[in-house]
Image 1 (tube, rainbow, N blue to C red):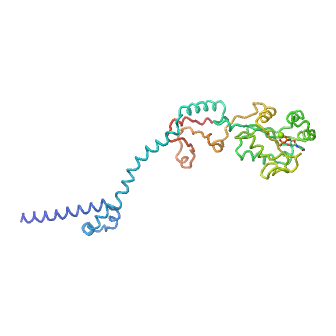
Image 2: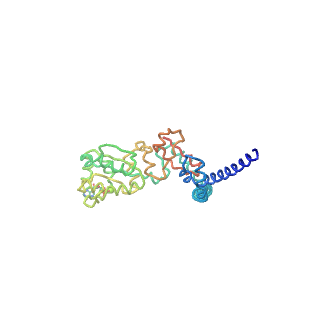
Image 3: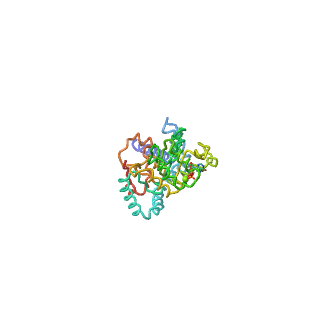
Length: 303
Ligand code: IDP
Ligand code: MG
């Protein structure tokens, strides 16, 4: 009895081992096979699909392994490629430190001084009378230029004669002075990249009949004697005219909220203050610092 029982046990054991082996071969090879199999009975499932078990491991299992192995190889390659873009990192950091010092004294300071070019623009009495002040200022604002000084005033004949002194020999000079003194004017200083040249282009030709459509004069006036706006024609005359019409203390030093959105080089990193999760989700933080260079985070917002 006992010998028969043992024999029966080992026969069953062998069958069970085979079934177990087949089961794990199938299990390790293919999820789909596992999903297809009926959960009703282990025995039916395990013994019925012996043939399929050989195909299963090939199709799915190697794929995730290959992906997992590739990732660590990619990282060092990226570091090696990025490294040469910061050959003079120390110089960059020095320049950034100097800029931050300057910014602490002048909130209007920019890294690229070309963006600080200034031009003198004046809305003439006809622009004021015709209600074009907002329209014209809007063009400069919308373009991205920064207003740093502005007055609404009646200009004296003396001031106007000094301003137009280079035209004093022209036949139209007396009428020009009379017209310019006949009502309030709006002298302004606008700041931005190529402000003088771009300002002149925005004005259009002196005589509106020659001004292109799209320019201020081309769109808003007809007669050369009523051409609504003045703009400096060179860097030298801009400096001279700004000094003539404005005292230094009348020119504001301020950082426009637009500056980072108008000039690529003027982006400041935000202070590393904690940010609420809903703000992060809304995309509030727009810092674009180099992820490979932690020292770059020295940039600070001072306002
Ligand atoms: P700009 O204003 O385009 O710089 P300018 O030659 O400096 O032109 O002349 C200054 C202003 O003198 C003109 O904007 C215009 O108001 C006036 N002006 C220029 N040429 C004539 C002219 O032929 N007749 C009448 N006024 C003129
Ligand atoms: Mg001129």
